[in-house]
Image 1 (cartoon, rainbow, N blue to C red):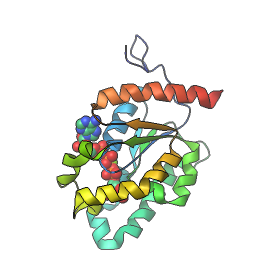
Image 2 (cartoon, rainbow, N blue to C red):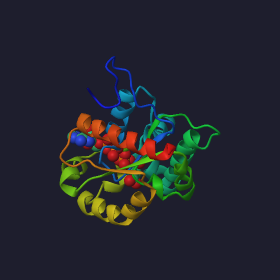
Image 3 (cartoon, protein in one colour):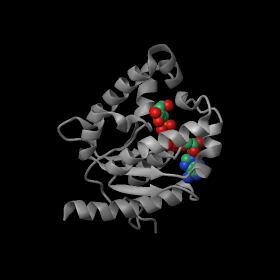
Image 4 (cartoon, rainbow, N blue to C red):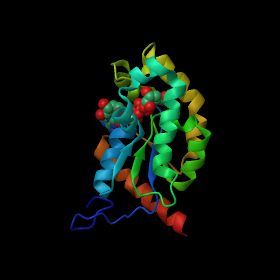
Length: 190
Ligand SMILES: Nc1ncnc2c1ncn2[C@@H]1O[C@H](COP(=O)(O)OP(=O)(O)O)[C@@H](O)[C@H]1O
Ligand SMILES: O=C(O)C1=C[C@@H](OP(=O)(O)O)[C@@H](O)[C@H](O)C1
Ligand SMILES: [Mg+2]
């Protein structure tokens, strides 16, 4: 039986707070977050998807209005979900740089924060094809490594749960993550 499911297939683990996925580009925040939400039977929100739906493709936003403007849209998209009196128990996947905003950092105290970590080997092929990530347009491997070095301590400080995504497929990672979320939830409630 999968974790988080009872024999009838309904989720057994019921999250009490939003679950927020953070971590470097291409570690799987969007796909693992979406699958986690599907298995738990709760809504999935991706801050990048919200921005694209409203303002168009991310590379175009960077090119036309700059990274600073993108960061403002990003912080607003996240605040729409978390800066409300009773945040919904959704899975929210952030873009890799969203945690640099101090307002977002404060809002993450209202959520269970999952840091997905990976080594370079795991993401190398993913970041060297063109994936619409403007920050990786030139020298993606060196840039990814530099950003991991500078952002890594921020991810680690904000995380309630850290999951290494290397060498596992998405269903395996979701299964492992639900076990970790159950343990974390017991801690939060004790
Ligand atoms: N565990 C995994 N195994 C295989 N491919 C994966 C895994 N996690 C993510 N991917 C693939 O890697 C790419 C980046 O995933 P994505 O969820 O967009 O990352 P992020 O949101 O962290 O930038 C996608 O093509 C996705 O399908
Ligand atoms: O790390 C970053 O600064 C960024 C990560 C991207 O999201 P993913 O981490 O989902 O690729 C996206 O928000 C944008 O290209 C900037
Ligand atoms: Mg993503």
